[in-house]
Length: 196
Image 1 (spheres, rainbow, N blue to C red):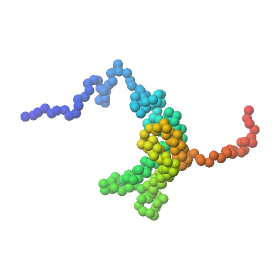
Image 2: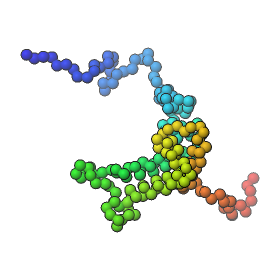
Image 3: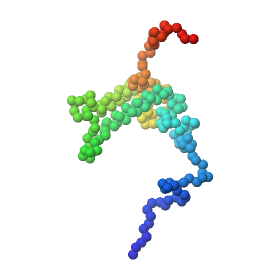
Image 4: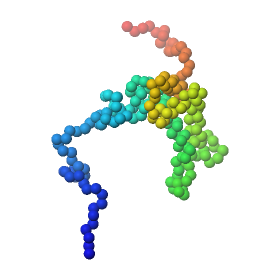
């Protein structure tokens, strides 16, 4: 006795379809723009015309859009987050897939103390620790980590501290110079007569 097999899964939506099988949108339904979709997302609300901007993906970028931090401070925060991800990646780093059960790291310097200059793991650790130590001395490491790494909003009372911490990061990472000396410029151009 043969029984009829039940279809697995939920039934298809009714309507006309393209050759690919995708459902055609009815002609009376208005097209939704990506900007309208972005403006409806909860983390992008209040950004107005800048809601679809790529910077609005994280709290640090939204602070740039709102004018609460500068582009240089945003870059410092991004670099700090990249250093943190690189360091965390070395704790249980990428593995060779063709070795037994994917074991074995890809770092050339981890093979022994004879080649510490080739160790990407050690370089990532030292880079992140240098930035972390500069923030820890100022007492701002936790605040920066909360906003930059964990994407938590910064309290209005803490914004000034965050800006100072990002400035410190900018100096540590070499994005700015701490030395505020008088610029000599090109001395030969200073002696040239001004053009009308």
